[in-house]
Structures are given as C-alpha cells and as structure tokens.
Amino acid sequence: MSPKQKLLLWKILHGALPVGDILVARNIIPISKCIRCEEPESILHLFYQCPYPQKIWELAPITRSIDCMQYLRLKQGGSWALRQRSFPQSETINKSICNAKEWRDAQPILPSKEIVTQGLRTPPGCETICRSDAAWKKEDKAAGLAWAFYDNRNERFYSHTDTYALVISSLVAEGLAMRSAMECAVNLQLRNMMFESDSLQLVSAIEGKSSFSDLHGIISDIHLLASYFDVICFRFRHRENLVWEDGLAKQALRGFVPNPF
View 1 (cartoon, rainbow, N blue to C red):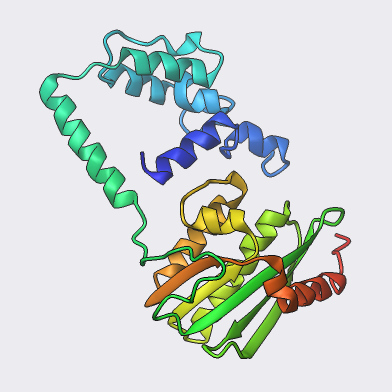
View 2 (view 1 turned 180 degrees about the horizontal axis):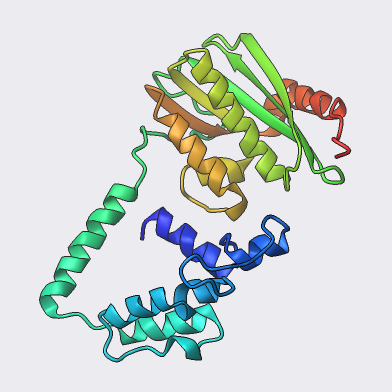
C-alpha cells in the first residue's frame, strides 16, 4: 500500500489521530464533539459508531452487513471487515491493477545511489565529499551536529555545526546531521556529492536495506533532498575517519543551552 495509507493505519492502531477525545486530554480543545453527530469523538466513533461511517460500511462490498456498534476495539472491527470482503472477478482484477498503479506511483523517484565500503575509491562523478557526525546527550535529549565538505584532493573547504533539542536517540541525531548536511549542500549549489557517516544503521536505512520507525520522517526528507543532486552516493566510514566532525559535534553539544520552558 502507499506510504500515506500505512501512516494512517499506524496512527489508528497507536491512538495517534487528533480526534476530539485526544485533543481534550491534551488540553487543546475544551469539548470532544463529532462534527457530524455532536457525540463525543473517539477513533472508534470516527470509524464505526458515527452514523456517517455506518452508512459507508453498509455500502461496502462485503458478504454480510457489519454491526458497527458491537465492536469495542478498532482492530477487531477492521479484522472482521477484511474477512468479509467480496468482489466479482472483473472488479477484483480492476482493483488489483489500480492498487498496483497506486503502489508504483507512491514509490519515491530517487537518483541512483550506492553504498561504497571503506577502502574502495570514491565513485566517478562524486566531486565533493561531505562527512557528517553527531553527539547526543541522553539526559538532556540534546544533540550536537557537525558536517564538513572536502574536495577531490581531500582538502576541507567548508564546515558547520548546529544543535537540536528533543532528540530521542543517537541514531536520530545522526539522521539530523545527514539531513542538515544535505540541506547545506543544496544551499551551496553542490550537485555531485558523496555523503559519509559513521552510522551503518543510518546508511542502511537510506538505502532501504533496513527500517527504523524513529527515522521515518528524516529518511523521507533525505530521499526528497537527494532528487536535487545530479550524482549522489552514501557511504559508511569508521569513526576514525570522521575525527574532525566528531570533535565539532561534541563541541556544539557542550555549548547547548537547554530551554527551561
């Protein structure tokens, strides 16, 4: 299914949709009220108990009608509905073709990227190397980010640091450093890039070889930024190859001042 559908289902199953009950619990609105029937709005109400979704379930192509009011949990009702679906043969093949096209259109269009292991030469076309690193402090949930650009003679010509608050893990900090480095490369109008990180998990996630829920939004941003470059590669490097960036990141973290509010 498309990423949009996956995100919606994840929010439903984890109680993350901003319905009335949740917004009241977070003191965002004073009253939980459905805009269609004025009953208290919960996720279960939104998909089953309100007259509006009940009418939709009546029109759904399932073998027998669904009693929306019998379900106390959203997942229970969804599982029952999936077991009851029924489509004619012609509609089944049409639905399959439409779903396949939707899945194809949902895939990000990315430039060719590759992971080059340490010790191999930089791939042809990568005129500039960017090395990024991050330092993370668990107690403050703060991160110091650093990145530097090198030319094809391995001479550094630009570096920068930044700090972030509310960073939940060192892996997220590494992802933020990579994303910031890419944004900087775009601003500098660098088009042929090799991005290096000492986080194998991050590089693997960028290449689609692994998935980490904490990185979902950051990886999406990285893929979007990658479309700007003419040539782009990502490479894992051991920490001893990013000593300069590691020092800058730690220095930035030491200078971080938490917001008391």
